[in-house]
Length: 523
Image (cartoon, rainbow, N blue to C red; front, side, top):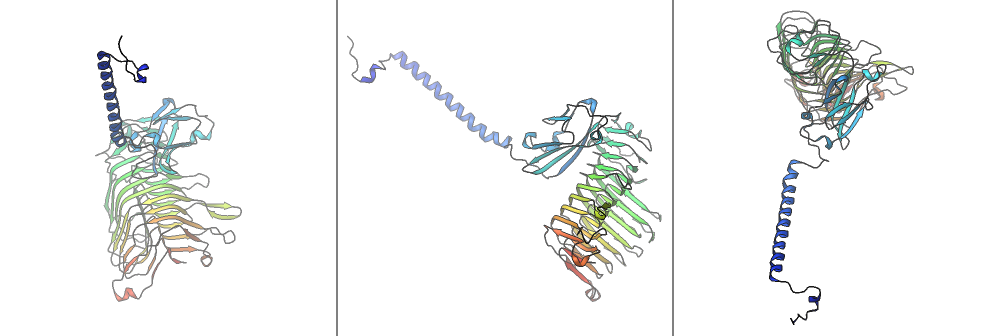
């Protein structure tokens, strides 16, 4: 009889044969190899995977408050938002909110799908929807969506674009990039709707008539993307002028997510102290002449170099708009340069600002008192504004955002550019936000005010002049009926950066110099 090992554990694990031992060893080797491979794969996945796919709570974008406007025909049932606007971020990295048309569309990844037809009698059918992409309460992207129910004219080519008639009243939808180099196009009295969907219009020289749309009235322009546009005019006329790369003049016209890139050069050596000149990177002159209609400029951006040398009663120069009145403005940005040079007498006033040269708000009755109704949100300018004049007696109103502002309020304002003024005897009224602010509708009893709040500025104003200087870190001069009570114009959440002033001669040293924060002088 075979003798058993006396080890009690052998009762549970009897002796194995040599074959069994070899098979077991082989199985152990296989198991160990599988474990090693799995661990290696896990480590490699962690190392390389994190590099390719960051955690979903991180949004990596170059800037915030980016705006776009897209239009789709209701009959198309779906529209794909270009992934390029998300700058390589996945859609699910954002918290998404749909406004106004939330009952009519749904968003699947970057595809907008219509789930319910718009009611033909509903006001929503005439409204812009909003898809807002946020993270941690910061808004990175706003997509304005327009659902088109009426007959749409598609613009697919140069010939389609050139077929737009003067006085057009239709609805136009641009489907492709269009090269306009060498063409002569200027659409007069446009009264329709044009949706560019951020397809490019490239290389148009608008020197002859000025502006892609010479004029627009009661129109809607959205998602238009002007690339490498140019205006150059050296003339001897004494006429009034309005100049903009998109349009010279506009009345009662909404601008949504317009982008303009290019340059403007206007020179006129003819002395005329009566004419008015309005020049803007997008529009020269924009007016809301209706008492009831609500006109908007939203999500627009310019990158335009503007060079002006001319005389006049009033010259308005703005990175976006030269002269704008009675319009609500939100989420606008400007880049580029403004240069004004002149070496003769004959100019009374120059208004220059990174967003607008002159901005006046719409006022109306409310409980028996007038109040400022218009306020602007998210104004950002990176423009460098340079003034260089000789033999001058001009009144300059220069602001990093607005040259002169009347009955308007500003929230979340950033000026990251530079203001540099070199003149002899001109009066310089300048501030990093606005040169001059005026409150004409202030009611003493109700303490109605103009508020400028949440301000960021980066650089001091530089002035080299022997003239009267009224300079403020935010506003050069504030005008209100009740200055002594400090109710007319107030400020909140702002930095203090005073101007650097250089006098040319002893005569300049003897003239008035005001350099304060946040406002130079109240009048």
